[in-house]
Length: 348
Image (cartoon, helix red, strand yellow):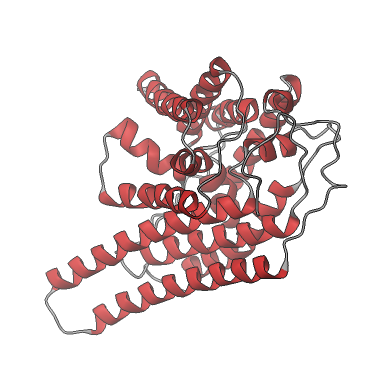
């Protein structure tokens, strides 16, 4: 199994490079599929923030976030005995959520929008933000011993505890990757077919809007599956990565991002050089802001501190809350929303 059903008081981390790369590649497929069909970058905090701070109720936001929730519900159906992993005390969870919400609001993104999408299009702004939140996360996790608060055994070497999936599990991951890619290709073919058919503009627009919404839901679903397979839903794994100086250091997160970017980089190159517009929309909505300013760096620091204090990020938390809801997970998500709203009001 990719994880035990019941977590012991002391968690011994395992280094799972194949899970990380496979899950990362699936994240990349979701990122590219969403980009090339809808023209929008895959940013979870951005989709969440727009509704909270601007009251934007565009259907695509709910389709995408609904796909993330659906991935958690499906995971629970296939693995009904799973339980929520330990989290820090409630005060720390709430503080971490507030920091993540304020930080992603200021920096306009998190590990998906900046970490995967921004870096995959070689945005210097995203690179600066990523370096900032990684550094801040490492400082927070180390200074405040996030491993201990999550029940991680810091003295147990993750690197010496290698876990490689069996052949049948590898086949399953390859199948998920192939089916996901084929589904996006099929939706793209439907959009192209709709363009080639003779009908009035309103009918074509309606069909494209429908395909675009299905794409958003599929992107959320596939991204959630990738988070589960990669292990990034586990706060303990994130803390293991951010606790760089501990013997339990787990570099899996680097492989997750590497696997995702290996797929996403060619996708962004295609969007920039080979496609005039996405399959279902009128134009690409790729951020053009190149400014590295105080607001960006402050946002990266705040997000990183919150991320490091609890090991939680919006996407993994949403999927985990749907799969195995807990009071602390829901409190963290509520705190993120409050942090986003508060930051927006203060800046405004």
